[in-house]
Image (cartoon, rainbow, N blue to C red; front, side, top):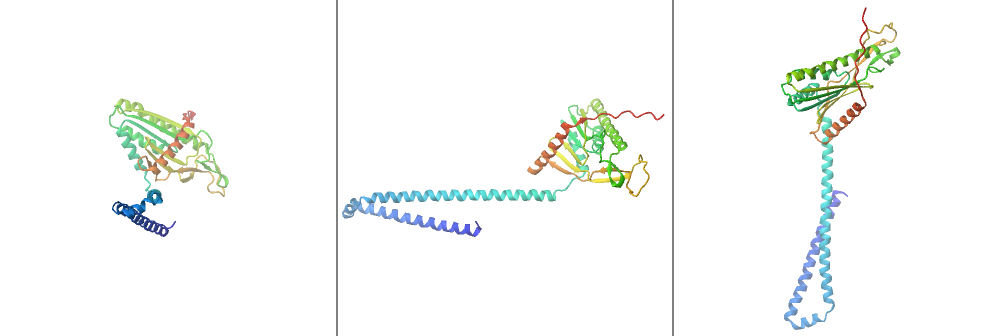
Length: 323
C-alpha cells in the first residue's frame, strides 16, 4: 500500500471515529433527557412506561457504543503493530546499509598493526593464545621471537603458540617449478629447503621456553603442525577476540639453481614458482559488531578444522656428509 493510500485511510478512519463519537453522544443525551423529563412530566412518563421496546433499544445503543469502542481499540492496536513492524524493517535496512558501507570503506591494516597488537597482548600477561596459518611461518615467528625475548618479568604469564604450515614432505605444485610449456610441477629440492626453514623456525621459537622460565617471563608452549595444502590463505589469531586474514596473492618466478635443463623456447622453463603475501590484512574483532563476529567465527572454524586434521611437524633427515 502506498503512502498516499495510507494517508487517505487514516483520514477516513479519523472522520468516521469522530462522527460515531458525536452520534453516540447525541443519542445518549436524548435518552438521558427523556428519562429526566419522565420523572417530572407524568404524561411523558406514562407514555414511556408503555414502550416495552425502549429498554431493548437502549441496550442496543449501549452495545453499539461498546462495539465501536472495541473496534477503535483494535484499529489502534493494529496500526501500532504495523508502525512497529515498519520501524523494525527500517532499522534492519539501515543496519544492512551500514554493514555494506563498512565493508566498502573498511581500511585494510598492515602487518605492523598485527605485530603491535600481539606485543600488547603479550605484555598484558595472563593467558595469551597466539595462532597462525601461513607459508613457512617466518613473518609470524620472527617478530614473536623478538617480542618474547624483550618481555617484562611476569612469572604468571602463560603463552601458547600454534603454527600451521603446508606439509613439504609431499609433492606439491604451488610452490613448485615452471616446467615445459609453462606447466607447473613439483620442485623437490625447493620443498626440502622450505621444510628445513620451517623446522628452524620451530627450533628457534622453542628456544625461548627455557629462556622465559629462567628470566621469570612466564611459561611458553609451542606447537607446529603440517597439512598437505597449497598456502593460499594466511590467518593470525590473538586470543579468542581478534583475527587477521590475508591472501598469498602474488607469484614470484626466479631461476632455480638446482635445475640443469638447457634453455629452450619456453623462457620460464626451470624457474622456481614461489608465492608472496600481500601487504594488507583484514582485521576481525569480537567487539566490532555482528558482521565482524561472523567473520571471526568463520576464520576460527576454518583454522580449527584444519588444525584438528593436521599432523605434527617432524624434523628432516640429516644431511649426508659432503666427503
